[in-house]
Image 1: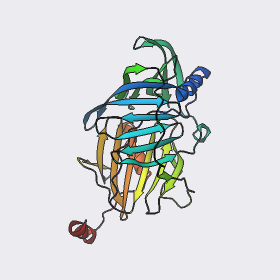
Image 2: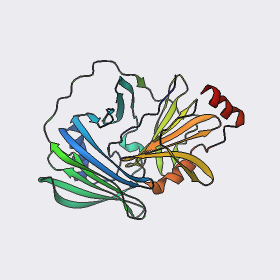
Image 3: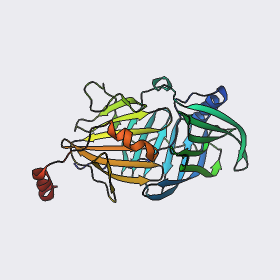
Image 4: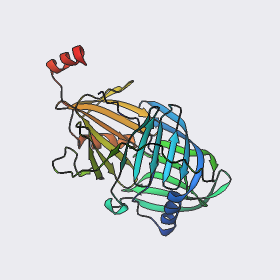
Length: 303
């Protein structure tokens, strides 16, 4: 069966930043909140502007996100699910707790602000003296209503902000069918290292058909690295090179996807990383290799 890499919408959950008590309380309140919102995301990428308007419905630990592509992602505290037109594709639970990631961000409390006519609280996150994000939380519900992320030069990478907000619990319906669940496995002998340039591997997953992926976080940004038995196709990809290694890349609003091949395996990275972090993260993963002339001829004939 041909596997299509899901284009996952990354919705921010901040699991491990070093924070003050007020921010901790907002995060806890936000995880329990109920609301409906529309979120506009605009990102300035090396391949051009990427933007999207999505609808978010949260009821406690469950969040559902829908967009123009009729693909739905539901994420909650400690996990995610991907839904498509034909139903649930898969789900996984990230077992890493907030203690799994050593806090690397300094948090500055910017105080009270207004957002969409409501009281809000703003914070700034810095890593190694570099501004990486500004967060705005709705004071009443704890909902994260705006996130601006920055690259190492201080330029804005992505701006995610609510353009409508209804702080009423939508009471999401129960799931009608059991989910195809991935269970975390031990990481011994994995091609995915435990640490990647400041990112900690929180969990490792594997399916019976040889599909594997690892989930990483530095306490704010996150990404998943995939390994599959065969090449991963990616429509409309741009070919890029880092350190004489070739990758195929696609930016969407708030997310980047890289695919390549290594020793006959299909590899991919999906995450919310600003562009200046891409090269160092990719350099820590299995490097691209040429599949060889015979393999390329075989693919041309038989797929």
